[in-house]
Amino acid sequence: MAADRRATVTRETKETKIRVELNLDGRGDAEVTTGIGMLDHLLSQVARHGLIDITIEAKGDLETDEHHTVEDVGLALGRALDEALGKREGIVRMADATVPLDEALATVAIDLSGRSYAAVDVDWTGERMGELPTVLVEHLLWSFASEGKLTLHGRVLSGVNDHHKGEALFKALGRALGAASRLDPRQAGRTPSTKGTLTS
Image (cartoon, rainbow, N blue to C red; front, side, top):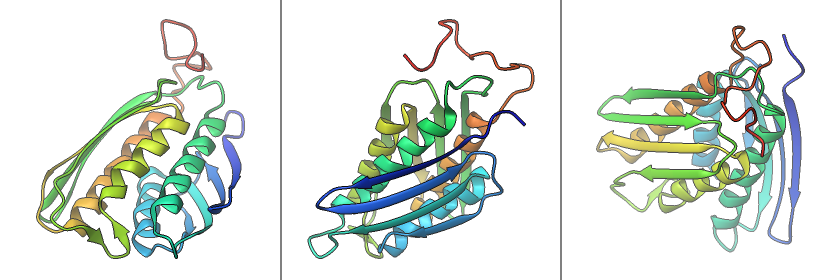
């Protein structure tokens, strides 16, 4: 195994206090406590299906609403990913995954390009999944991509139940992220880019 691909990030503002631990070469273990049950559930899917160990402890101003907590968790998780990837040498870099969950079908494509972009297309049925406003799912993924310095395209292709749509989307994210961040022995420490860098 190459260098230790772990990171610990803390983010503290007047609105939130967040700590994230991430291990790209983990077993899919997750300990996520954000105060928003559905957010915990979705992020645990990323860990489990990406074989990435993720620990998140978040305390936010939920008495205001969920927005600051969701946004800042995404930012901190993205920053942890960026730090754990280091110079991004030897990684597969690009991957995609399509995941069904009963009637729902979701696809995610990832490029650990060093450039931040997210395009998320979901037709939600309702305004909330449990305690999580559905409109914040896209914002979470934008925040994650921004600090993670990655390109993310996610679409829910079909579905009726919002829980199924969200869970399929985050399972697909986990599988795509796990595959893209995996070390390719044929790269042998080389950067997977004709530019020679993915960090500038």
